[in-house]
Image (cartoon, rainbow, N blue to C red):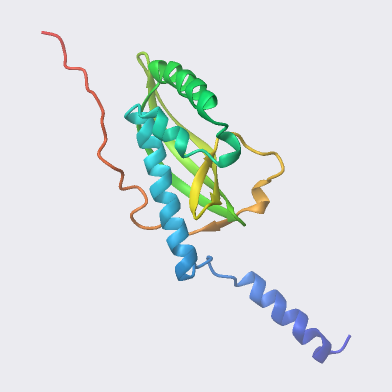
Length: 169
């Protein structure tokens, strides 16, 4: 192999090793900003116990109609009675086609126990908006997702409705 034939290979290696953090074009940036809005709105519906609104944010394959909606709301209300979401923060966003993986750090309270956990949540771009996927599809692997910059206002949430117990006198 001569030096000349190595030049394209060398150039490719330099490009790959010097690859910058991904930047987004205008349309993709809008899409990621909208994703952030939807993630915040979704968790706000749980915080404010607006379970019907949360159901409407599910991806179409998980919305099965009127009876399913009632059952989902009933089950979610039961869960909501034992867990209160105190706050959340978006940690990372990865994109793979029309699927987004959003790492959320959530603080919740169950009884007298308060905890903070990180979880990956999946969203699907369909019908010109982002919709929540309530289960992880095992066809996706972490390597499928390209991490993208989080918009600077990602963690400015809607008004938070946290009830604080006052000490008894």
